[in-house]
Image (tube, rainbow, N blue to C red; front, side, top):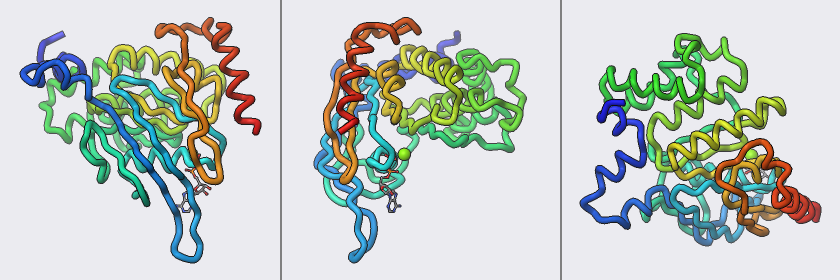
Length: 279
Ligand SMILES: Nc1ncnc2c1ncn2[C@@H]1O[C@H](COP(=O)(O)OP(=O)(O)O)[C@@H](O)[C@H]1O
Ligand SMILES: [Mg+2]
């Protein structure tokens, strides 16, 4: 791999290159989200609805954190606020000490609905962010080649989204978001529409990518298995009003194969969270 390409695609290398003169501590704050006393009220004066109450949460750099909770507890609202797509009512939130005031390329997003540009090929979709950033065509090509290999869609480089299965589209959506080298990946039930088998394959692929890129991930799901399989930490939310009930550290090895789903720690945690969500 050329040095230029390594810089363009590798969060870690490019980051430490750019920041080495600042000392060691700077890199440790890359992609850290800090949320304090966050409240969200929807509606006007007469008809208000408190969607989020007293949310305090810090997501550390390189952390894979999942927000788990039933439908309607405010998960998407929280993610959209972090994305800068929704305003909050009270409290504060920052990314690497900078207040979040709107959307930005430092946060990549993947949603359940397929958000690829239908008029662009798979390769063009992946190159979209780098192109906006003004990265030259040859480097862009190398970036898309790298990602096509990672998501195993090299033979679909010139296909259009409508020619892909649901799982393939989400693989492209993930690659497209990461090709932009965001500090944080925000993922809102990205595998929610996929069949069980494809979903498991996607989870494994996502972990593989996260291990390589070490970007911070804020992942949303209502699926307990998915939360445990993927995360280092799980924050469980409850509804009415949307709030944090409890958080769990997932004490499973970082390298997780399918067999981890039978691990005693996995099963114990699954029982405990299911119990909490029953109430
Ligand atoms: N734009 C909106 N206006 C009013 N209420 C909303 C709006 N968006 C979401 N809500 C309400 O806020 C609550 C949380 O929604 P949401 O964040 O989508 O939950 P989740 O993603 O956990 O299912 C729901 O009761 C929903 O009806
Ligand atoms: Mg939602």
